Image (cartoon, rainbow, N blue to C red; front, side, top):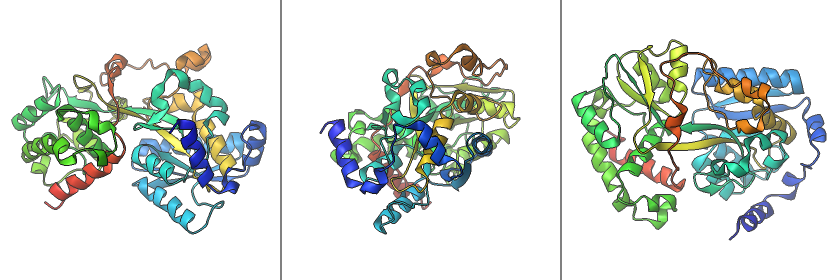
Length: 400
């Protein structure tokens, strides 16, 4: 089935009233958005991220007379479930969620269940600044075609960091990590599954250990799950006894992993934001001896997006909010290490010199990663693998 036919099928399944908004008149959309309250469901587990969203809310109130309410989530799947419940109850136009920070299996679930408004991205004036034709990574989400149903917002790639005052030479691949952890017992761990950072570690390890990675880019039900994942469980069985707290307890999240590094309990950790270690050094959360690096052969990377539910009660406000978050002003502030450090999705060649200047960072930071280190990115597996991996991990290690 072609992408166009798939999209036509999805739109046919959504109640007609949910698609009634005219998307070719931006001035009218802005006018309708004024005075609206936009409920943005977004992860709320990091203070810098929350502060950035608070700043964005202030700017939207000043510029567009929009009240942006950050509905803080621990798990994006809860927002997906809420939209699905509203659809089941016949709520096709007055949904409680206007905008969702999303990607991966949550986007796939919303698309599969016809829970998304759109396609809308081409209607956003600032979307052109991403130069989508030159950047295929913003046209697919964990192998699933985006087809205009979510707008790119930021980039992520698995990045390791260590305390150079404690570690002379960090491990450069997953096998070296196993040896390093045995030699430095208790100095490394990963977040508790199903935290997305912890789950990303599972996928990184599986990509490195699997004899054939091809099945990972197809639906999991089409593969021999036990055979494909056997090397991962053998690896974790060997790794866990030498982890922090001997693998019997795990930190709850990436931010908690960073706190353990800051407290000196760990010497090696990782994040899904390449700029996070440098931002944490700038914010005095990590020591000046912190250094960042990427594993040999590359690491897992993806784009995170903004989506609008099919029944959002304030679609105009959601569109204007998404467009603002793609503006050079908002993207430059988001990328600033002193603010958040989340990499921009804008293509610098689409910006004028003044706009590009806003992205320049003249601060010396020893923890900053060389941008060239991110040149090799490993694509995310098909989203169906995430849930199966998490279920298998919980069955094997969750009750210890």
